[in-house]
Image (cartoon, rainbow over all chains, first blue to last red; front, side, top):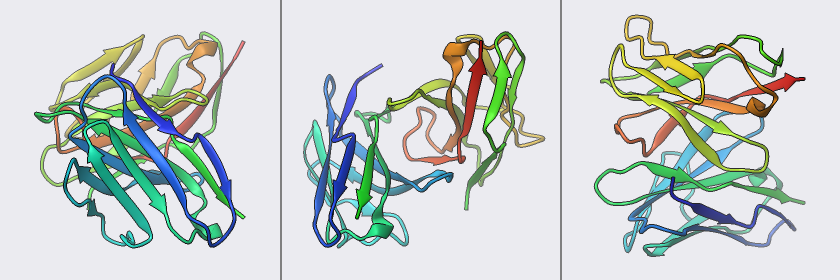
Length: 115
Length: 113
C-alpha cells in the first residue's frame, strides 16, 4: 500500500504552547486527508476532513480555532494544537486518500503529552 | 449516528490457538466494513474488508463475513502466531474504499509462544 508518514511520533509540550503535527503522503497525491484523535482505551474519533486547497470540515464538537488544519499541498497536511492544555493529551492519527474515492492510508500516529 | 462495538481486550492466546474478535455495528444505509491492524509503533494497516452483505473478507489467514441480519463482522483466525500480536480495529465507512471511518475501540491481542 501507499506510505503516509506522520511526524513527530511523540511530542511533549508545556501547557499554553502550540504544537504542529505533520502528515505527508510519500508516494501519491493526497487530495483528501483525515485527522483522528484517540483517547485512552477509546475509539479513534474523526476530527476533521481536509481537501487540498480548501478549508477543513470539522466534526461536531471539535474546536476549529484550537485544532488548526492546513492542507496547502497534495502531499502535506498539518494539524496545529494551539494553546495546548493537559486535556489535549491524546493520540492523533492522520489518513490520506487520493482522487476518485480511493482507499485512505494511515500514518503511524503522534502521541501528544501536554504537561 | 453510526457506531461500532467490539469486544474489550486485552485478549491473550497461546500460539496456534483459535481467535475470534467480535464486532457489531449500527448504521443507516449500507456501509462497508473493515478490519484494521496496528502493530506496535506503526500506523493502521488494512487487514480485510467487505463491501456488501454476505461478502467474506480474508487476508493472512484472517477472515470476517459481513452479516447484515446480525449486524456483525467478527474477525477469526484458525491458528494465531506470535507475530499477530497487535491492536485490531473494526470500522465502517459509507465509502467502499474506506475514507472517513467510524472505528470501534480496538482490541489488543497478545499471542504467547
